Image 1 (cartoon, one colour):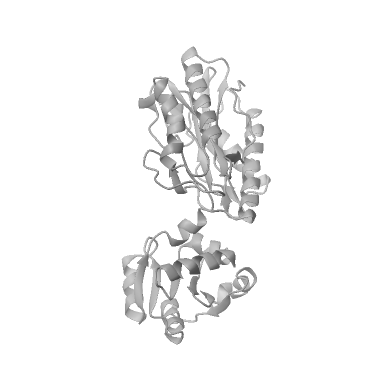
Image 2 (tube, helix red, strand yellow):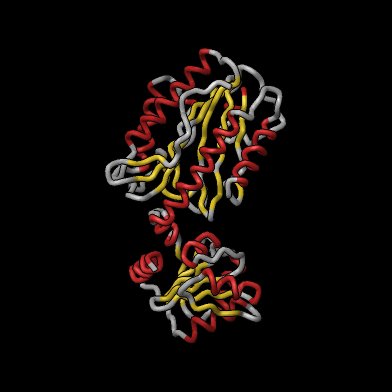
Length: 353
């Protein structure tokens, strides 16, 4: 009920009698329902889950404390009936989730005033509960185990896709539903691609390999990056690695509640600039993490949101030099009263395999 009560506080602030929730992440967040079909209606007094015959039993078990209502024909007409019966005058909908076509269907059937809302639940989701943090810690642990495993798996001559597949299989064996996103395996000059999704390129001696991956576990994501070497690397690649590692550690040490995402970003960016690599760090230092791999707040030069206790963000500076190579190091951290704590425990010093 803690999440619902926070949402009701927001409804009151915006003078709304209810909110229609259709975004699948928000629906799961507020109700616990893991299926693929259903609409949640939250009013100031009730919480209603509307679905079809296929999900009635599942919803009754997962959406604890909700009134479970079955629609046998149009879900929008049934939703309109529920709103009419309760005499709701102003009802919000998630504007980022609704197509124009569906909005027109809403407007045709629903008599209440429809009010577009943006980010209402996304803002609530930024502050994690203790139960959420426990799950995210487990998701991060799976990532750590996968990294330890892959270090003994990688050999020169195998392809990046082979490494990616091994990471995926390993994480699923540890209990993950899947990876959090398309796994990045970028070796050699491809390590200069920030989002270098695994390719058919063969891994060679003398290269850096960047792995960016995460486990989707019980509905929550982890997201970690490590870079390691296959055989001895050049002095230039070593300098890139050492610079990124120091920038990362400065970000980990300094990020805390009360600062803005922009201020947190400066902790890593200023150092990378001072070392002469400012033009080679073109993305933000980090982002929020939770049910989705990219949530608020942003740790970037445009990050205006103030960091608060129990937000989970990534710290992932990188340097990417075309035709040479690149490096990124990333942890998931929980903002605390006095600073932060990292959910990842995997080593960060340069490992040579």
